[in-house]
Figure 1 (cartoon, rainbow, N blue to C red):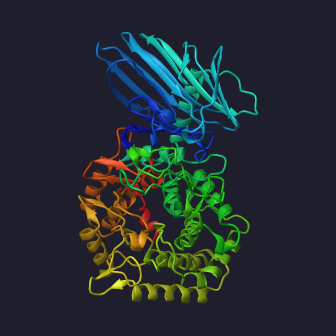
Figure 2 (figure 1 turned 135 degrees about the horizontal axis):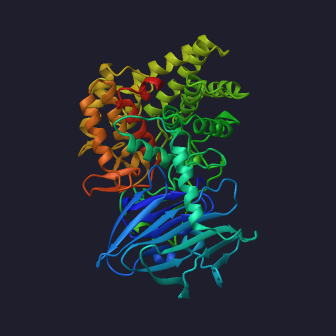
Figure 3 (figure 1 turned 90 degrees about the vertical axis):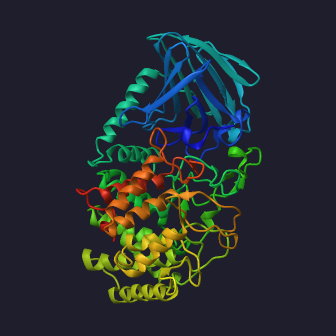
Length: 597
């Protein structure tokens, strides 16, 4: 069985990623890209589905950390007799190279430690056993278009379709292992120097981290979150994937298992704030340009989700040969949400351009024409029911958050004319902005409960309503906002954490419950900050920081009863929300909500 979700650490090369367990096992690896079929998939199955273990042969105590301001992982293993060995794990930044490598370096620190290595390559999400051939440098594994090479001076043996090694390390001893992926049609690259690659990768990350400007009481979690966000960036295109994993469950044993290895437009404005306020203007520009490319086309065909390079077709299917994480089925590849109507993304796109203008990022040729086309579609499109922010698989409804974001779209279009001199039908867009505002206040607000509801005519709440003051739809001191926050506190907050909504199959089309949604809990802290309830905001923020794992990573959801992380991991949206809330609570910073609202 795979380790607990929070037992994993992330390594990556800005193109693909791997998860390394506290036990020294790489249980998830997609090569060469985030959404490529996994070569190690035991995370969602068992050891027969591929893994790579390096750990002491006997009992041990592990302790790990990332090297300062990097994505280079160091796991220190202390064995019973006091011997110590360290395993250094990383993926070198590709920087235009075709090959993708995962490097593991074993270093002897104290005494003599007997180490073991086990490696099982299984292409196609753990299904395909490759043809493995011994080489003087290690082995090659081939299957169809895929090729992997293991380079190591350590003697290895192959048996039962796996590769094994046992070796001793003492003080000063070093045993490198370099696993490199390339197309089977291409010749392999030059033999790798693991020590040089480690030095180069460490330096690259530390140089990059110097560009992070946050100087406040929460620098460590903010910088770690920024590094995680960078690690989930597809360097060739600037797209940022939601997570490097698929089908980690929102409920252990449940069916709420989705593929998150894609880019969501919904996360766009949050991400842009986090990057720009942290001084990462180049990353912000790349992200903005990615959005511009994928949004281009017929406005009615804009999707909420795209591939890392902007791919539109993301067909969803079930991988029936994998048993699922802790028997949580099904395991899904692809995401049906690419076919849904989600009106809020139009507001996110317009908000991205608005924020870009405010931070001085110049518009590209034709970007205003695209925005005008989006507004033309939304003039009538905002009246349609949709699948909403949570991508429900039940009937389409008039979700309140979707309508609010349609209001945001027209509000930002109006501001583009008023504040930045763009040409457009100002009076008409003002009128539509007011019409949408009135429609929401009339149809989504429940006067008896004193709160906004999940959708028109509903009696249920939704944590996405916390966005209303954050986007400037209503001021935080409006009694309707206060009533909505109070209702969410009463009905959707459990053991201090915020749930998205009360799961209902008639709404979301799925069975079972789920954990609390980590970004929503950060949104509640943001609301407290806006309302002047600073102590409550800081207290909630510190509690959220406490659920990060030992190397500072957050998943999508959290189960406070079982005290474990749930959902895909690590989750970009959770770390983006952490960054923005830290800025909101740092006195010397410009609050993200103030810039947005």
